[in-house]
Length: 328
Figure 1 (cartoon, rainbow, N blue to C red):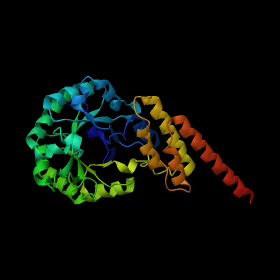
Figure 2 (cartoon, one colour; figure 1 turned 180 degrees about the horizontal axis):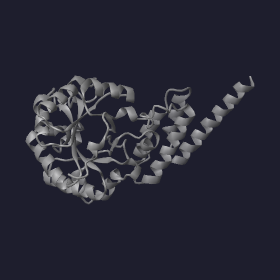
Figure 3 (cartoon, helix red, strand yellow; figure 1 turned 60 degrees about the horizontal axis):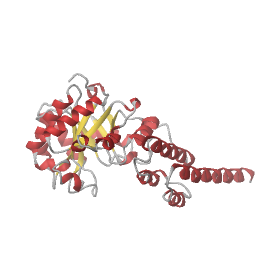
């Protein structure tokens, strides 16, 4: 492996978590613009799908800009050979790293024997890592997983993964069964670091779960000894999350939302349903007077022009209110 960007990162580093239909190209570019983390992950993509007739559509999930680098493509699948060939394709696309999803609890993924289902099949999981490395060639391979399937199995599960020497392992500090219904157990991340050290492995341990901001992430890294922090939901509606010098006003939030919406349409056109963008509306529009009513209006929009019209009306209303107060 010659192009290992992970070794150049200053610890503790921060990563954007792979989230399906959330960390797509437009949102990643917004995060890059307003508060770029050290490493960016794509939303996950099916390895089988990348090699199918429908690969053109799936490739849209892997669109990225140079400003996002270093960027890691996340794949899921249960066929080692397919994973290998998909990795070769990802390398050609110019990614800096490849991550194998071994933690997704979604039923459609589990049915394929992929995601968190691999926790129950460590032999296959190890084979997938080996084949992924073959396909990846000179770029590094990492793994994202959970602490166990129905219970904490880190003592048995983690050594299996470490034996294959992935460059990094992200530990989502919950079991598959727990989903996100309980608080993340960061004591297990600390234990993962101990296991790694005991095995004298050079694999980086990245902690993930419930981190809401940079300050909290730094504290988690210090208490567990992990090399990096991965944040998922914390970025939702806050692409500026890691920018401690930027605390946007309600008007600025709406400006960013509009830029995000226009970028979504510019990149995807009609290839991705506009409703996907609406989950971001819910996240952006909160914490200020009139947010609920504005959210309701935005959720009824069908395109970027309608969004722009509503936001302009809201901004004009705000300006009038400010002028009225200044006169008084």
